[in-house]
Length: 267
Image 1 (cartoon, rainbow, N blue to C red):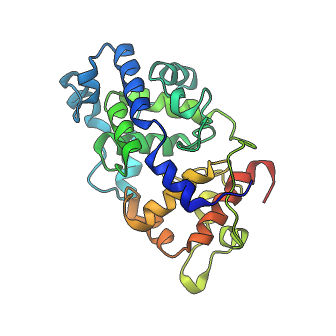
Image 2: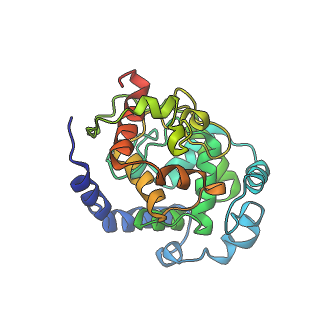
Image 3: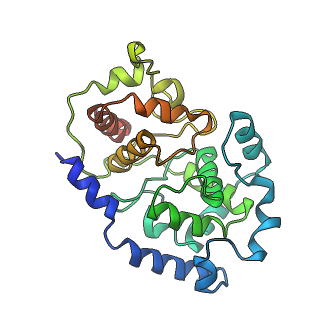
């Protein structure tokens, strides 16, 4: 389905009913965890949820690959079934769907995402290293209430789900050659192939190299634009930021479509 992305992206950035959704989600989470709404909305976690619970895995002001590897290695082993309970208790489905496939264009699909990537994002939300907009503010308020064990468990739950297929989200139209960028990059512009980090099937790679197959194309586009502008800067060694800055808008939209259709073999 064709989509005029600048207009749609602007509408999605403003978010439809996001303030009401935020209040509803945080109210339910606070009730489930025995907190007051004021505590859930606080910029810092309540004392019982702060120093002791989060010190072992707190994100630094900026990641290095070694620091990230160490932080992920200190997390406890995750359990997908316990993660399903966390997913339910924290009302994650209200934005990300019952099994990690988001019901709207405003949120990313988490189904099939690498556990290490999801865990890193939650650590980044906790520390405010990732804070590029209203959605990130909401995720911060949720992440600060999570223990390292909950982070590991919910990350394992999403990793165990199949990647989305034919999710019905509108696709951008672009004439750029996405497959060339994925497989060969562009040496003339020092653009490395996407597959070198994210895998030839978009399955993801080491540490923070996310799985991209089946991802919501509007979220994909917004993410690369945020890296381009510097609004999002939580990538270790600034690899994604450097990559995104060399892409045209047309190329970003072509890659968004390529990865959105990848699980079903449509390219």
